[in-house]
Image (cartoon, rainbow, N blue to C red; front, side, top):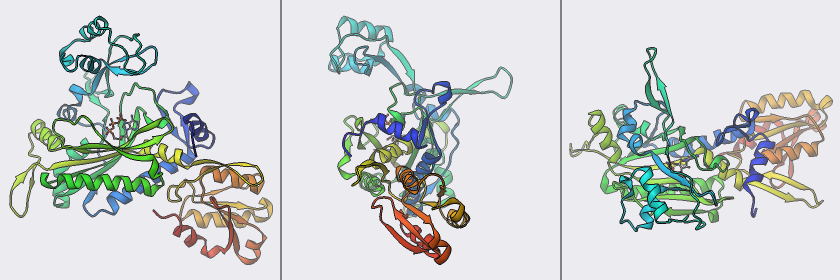
Length: 457
Ligand code: ATP
């Protein structure tokens, strides 16, 4: 569907129980969202599909579920304590936000090294040189503020004793610090990967754009440990796998593209994103990064433990190179919602909202609808009990059958099963397809296998 606006997606999600504004009764809390009864199923299915594809179906990938709160030395080693904050300023005219040091470096074509300047010196330089907003060419800046992107909290076992700890801003450190444990317990040979799905937290100050950028989000990511000589092939392989995964889930090929990073970290050989054409434009959906030996070397240095691998054939010891593949579960869920949401005008002129989501991701796989509550309700409850042992099933006995179909269309239920007199007399039901609206009659005993066959990923 063309030109769908983010506001339409937000209100659709709110109306049908996909996503609500966080803490809404207190007027919300910027850049937080709560998944509702339908949304939580969708997002859980996104995570299940990712895990199935990248962990279950890959004999050389092992999962972990590491603690969110890590020893603060982790964040010293990773560089986050020193550098995960930005000197930012806003253009009051167009509301765009920029890093002050970047503005100066770009203006002076690299002649002035802004990183050594205080915020006051940077402000003076920007004013004296009349550096305008690169976006709207205006000259109306807010003062510079240093924004730390890591959330801090504290921990103290004794009254008055408070040690700063951080909410992790990325999940991957949980894999790096467990590299030795996982390799020892699985006896994995490189190349192998450690994968994790979990929450990350970033004190993002840029406008949210719904689920696209939030201060708390889930990452689905893996770190592949390999020999440096194999690393570029593995990098290319994950680019392909990452693209295939989102296409298989149902994102349109024409709305996906690779975007190579212009600036590489000093330790990286390559880095790229897959971008998706969101209603707000082309934006990063996931990243694939060559991280060299940086992460494990830093943890070796800061922990004093040798983060090495011994090649069983040559007995050579070395620090493996890492290829990282990371995708946000919430951001991917948003992309899938944008892709699936359709408004269709039917032959009779009625407009139906239909959520054409891949059945493997559908919040409910089937809806059980008794034609007349009083007559068919008991049988329908029996069928609900049978189906719900196998997959998420919903039950609706209110309103006309047409209205009930519409509601299921809008939340993406691929199948509606209607219980009527034929069910009581012949043990058959009609099963209606969400996308084609066609109905077929099948025996109740065949329902589970029929649905199961059509909801696999
Ligand atoms: P961006 O450039 O959009 O800030 P990033 O390059 O900092 O993202 P990574 O650190 O590589 O992102 O994180 C991997 C993935 O996690 C991203 O591709 C994105 O899908 C997701 N992600 C990152 N930050 C957020 C956020 N604030 N809200 C939701 N998802 C996020």
